[in-house]
Length: 236
Image (cartoon, rainbow, N blue to C red):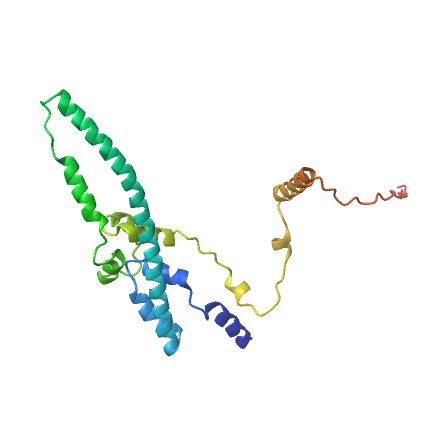
């Protein structure tokens, strides 16, 4: 029994689970330190180091995809901004011709300078800065809202925050451990097989609607003749 349970455990945990690894890294209390701490305990020898490098490589690869997506969005906004800036310049020139009392403030030149500075890629990425920064220290049992932390640090990690929220918002489906690692057969009792009245009615109505919509005919059950049974009641 133990060997069968161990075989199922190795089947589910033998491969590196990237989703759980990325979710742990996006937790500012653990970051990549938890991978370097836990993987040598889960995997043996060189396999742990290979999985650590595998997670780091794919993590940076995923981050680069978000960077490219963000740059594409900025390029699209730049075209719109360029058209609006040209229309703004023309309107300013017309205003200058109509009224000489309004002076040019230089705000347009300043915003263009800022956009040129922010459009260039920094030397260190958001992911590098995030991993190099210290961990968020929390006492055991203290509640910590990871999503709220990323929301508060969205300005600091502009691209990485989007990636973190996308990863942390993925729902994790769970299965009962007795069902996953049980070596026996599954037993369906009356409590698990019984459906509610509303559920049965919804299934029957849905089946009839689908058959009617696609012109399908259900199985016609042969009508059986009712048998009359005479019961003689004793006279008291």
